[in-house]
Structure formats: C-alpha cells, structure tokens
Image (cartoon, each protein chain N blue to C red):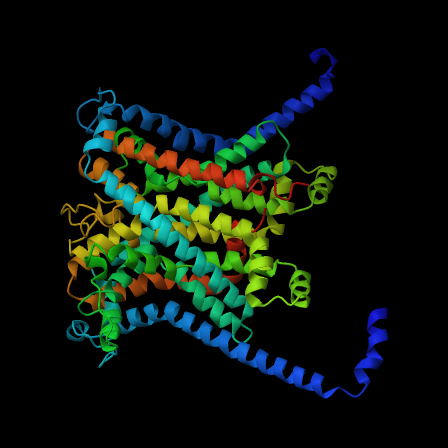
Length: 317
Length: 301
C-alpha cells in the first residue's frame, strides 16, 4: 500500500503534517500542561491524603466517602445548585427572550434601549455584587426604602437564608445582556414570510409567537438553557462576595470566612473546592469535589454538542 | 412585479367605507402597540439603569448621609472619588489589573489565532477530536484543575503572590478565543487563501497579511472578551495573589476596600464606580465589535 505512494507526495504530506503541528502547537502544549496533566493529577490526589506540608499518602476512597457522607457543606451546595438551575436559569432565559423580543419591536430610541439593557452584563461581577448588597441592604438600602414606602414587606435579602438566592437571582437577571443579544439576532433571522403567512391564516400575536417564533428559535433557547446550566455549575464570585460582604466579615484580612452566609444558603460547588483546598488544606477532598464538578460540567457539555452539531460542522465549505 | 401592476388600478378606485374604517382601526392599533412597547421598554430600562444611578448617587454622598435612608445627596461630595483614588493600594491594584488584562489579551490573541486558523482551514485527521476537546475545556470550571495547578505554580516554580500563573498560560491558546475565531474564519471563502497560496505565500504569511486584515472585527471582539475576562477575574487573583497585597487586582482589592471602610457605603460605592467605569468606557468605544462577538457565540452554527 505505502509503496504506491509517490515519494514526492509523501514528502508533501509530511510537510503538511509538520505545518499542522506547528500551527496547533500552542494549543497542544496548553492542553497538555494546563488541562490533561492537572486533570490526571486531580484524580491522583483524590485518593491521597495531602495537606501541602507532609508528603501525600494513599488513603483509598476515604476522601470520597468523607465528601459524600460526612462533609456537612456538600449536599447543601448541591441543593443550592439545583435551586439555581431551576429558578435562576429559567428566569434568565425567559427574561432574556422577553427583552430580546422587546428590543426587536422598539422603533424609537432603539440604540438607547439596547445599550441600557446590555450595560449591566458588563459590570465586573465583584463590583456588581457589592452594588447589589448595598441596594438590597435591609436597613438603609434604596430597594427596601422604596418597598417600605409603598407598604410592601421588606425582606432581609442577602442576610436571610430564604431570600439570599432570590437576591442572587435578581442580580443574575439584571446582567442578562448576553442572552438578549443572542436572542435578538435569532429573532431577526426568523423568515418574515412565515409571519405573513400566519397572519393571513388569522393567527393572533400569541399564536404567531407559539407556532412561528418559538419553533424557529428553539435551538437558541436550548443553547441558552444548557450554557446557563454550565454557568451555574461554575457560579462562584457572586455568591462568595455577596456572602462575605453581607456577613460583614472583613474581606481579605486573613479572617477565616466560611462560605455560604447566611446559613449555607449561598454555597456552590466551586466554593467548596476553595474551602477544602485553600482554607482547610485538605487537598484530597478538594479534588473529589473538583471531579464531581468536572463530571457535571462534561455531562452538560456533551448534551450541548449532541444537540447542536453545528458547533462542530458549522459553515464547513 | 406583474402582480403589482395588475392590482394598482383597483387601489385607485373609490374606497369602500368599511375599508376606511378598517384602516383607521389598524392605525389606532399600531399606535397603541407603539405606546405599549415603549412603555414596557422604559420600565425595563429603569430596572437595568436604576442600580447604576443609586450606586452613583451614594458614591457622592457625605459619610453621614450615606448612613441614612436618603436617596438623593444633599451635598455632592465629589472628593470621595479622590479619597478612593488616594487610598492605600488602589493605584497598585489598578496597575496590576491593567498589566494582567493587557498582557493576557495580547498573548491570548497571538497564540490562539494560528490554532483557530488550522482548525478552520487545514484538513487533517483528528481535527474534529481537537474541536471537541477545545469546546470541553471551554466549558470547564477553573476550579476543577486548580489544586494541581496551584501546587505546580507555587511549590514547583515558587510563583506564589504574583499574577504570572494567570498570565503565562495565556501564551498557549484560550479555548473560547480559538472557538470564536474559528467560527469567524469559517465564513471566509476558500478562494482568498487559495489565491495567496498560488501567489507563493506560505501559510503563516497568508494568515498575517491576508486573513488578519479581513477578520479585524473578530479579533477586536475576542480581544475585548479576554480583556474583560482578565479585568473581572476574581478567582485567579484570589488563589495566586492573595498572599501578597502588592500583586492584588481591582476585582480582588475592591472587597478588602469594603472591609476597611465597612460603614462608609459612600466610599465603597465610589470605588465600585471607579472599577466599573473603564469597562463601560471601553464598551462605548467598541460597542459594535462587542455585540457582533456576542452574537457569534450563540447564533452561528
């Protein structure tokens, strides 16, 4: 077989292979050193007892049973993540679609509205979270001031375990600009003829949305939901900063802050990696949580890639 | 065309009163619709903009007034911004953030571009596998690999208390940047690269002299994304820089600012404004590139 290949052709193929390798080399190095190696190493450490000082010792599945059975923060964090997936992701997609629809209908001052709706998405998470802890501050914050004036009960927001996740949800819905832009582009791509045909058939506004808009944009809705779920797995900065600032713990002063304030209600899995690894120096258990996070994130990524083959084959000529 | 000329005379015939009435109600409906849409728009705009307004109003209040429930400042104390600016550490955090964001962005774009080009334009075995791996790493929370990475940078290379562990990896491609650039490169017709090849251009020269000028908007978009990512990063500096205040960034330092001034919401909000401001200024200058980039993340494909 290989004898049939002309030597000139073989030389050219080898040159092409070298060229491919050269162009891909930054990624190959990056992937090996900053992804593959640490991933394998995480699996290794998950079976080790290691505190960073004494050399690691084999402990079998002890870290795993500790995390799943005895670690008091694990299940609350997983429950919170589930709550956030159900409520926060849903509300973000619904509001993102609503605002996207609204912006396609606005004729006067479209530029102003688009910028106004988009801007909060850009606010740095730490700054935005601190702003919201202030705005929703139960005592002197403007929101409770206004709610009190109209006679609506004033919740404790970030200081009340029942209201901390709703408060985070408001913050997340505020930063909806990315979804708005994605939905806006998708909505503008829906063929106009389909709306006209539906109108001729006597379809009202709701029927047009239900039977023309939604089927056309359903892949984008799916994309928004799955990436939303993946982002929720990664949810770290906002709940951690909100908990720290609301609890009054002096940030970064070395004072130990157990994440999740108030009463574990803002715990998420990434915060547990930090708590185990960088506050308790229990690297083994931190790696177990990291692997749980890995499996969850990969499961949803697989779903995303299966649902959207376009991810791989789009615009192939 | 022919259809239009055929119906044109009919339109000139005297209109039936019922038609006139129908047209009038249609116009009234359109006007009501306009009012409803814009009213809803204003309500939504209030939700999105008011938090900025309240933060700003509090930022210029006096210390005493910031402790009250008042919403409007009695006296506008602009010096709060000066106080924050001169606060210990603030300028250092500002400088560190700028170094991290500028170096990180430049390295990311330069190292990701050839990878994206190869994935979009070369045919080779395992190309789809590479794409699957790129997308997988893109979706991975940074916490998954942080323990070995932290041990590697601090115990083996002794880089604890610096931002280098965050900057150096950016010289080896970033999954999200590779993905976005590839999506954009796929839209460029093959003829351009082939014409360059016929002219005897090597692949690297084709990329730099032919392709890069064509995809400037996409490069601007990914550069902005990466700049904002670095500017906003909290977890990275928390892990690697926390032990050394001289290496803190704005996002990380801001929180300690709240700690040091924990009763002065006005100063904390002034600091918040100063952290948000550059991002917003950059956005206003590059709005178009940015929106195009966001669209590319979700729609293409």
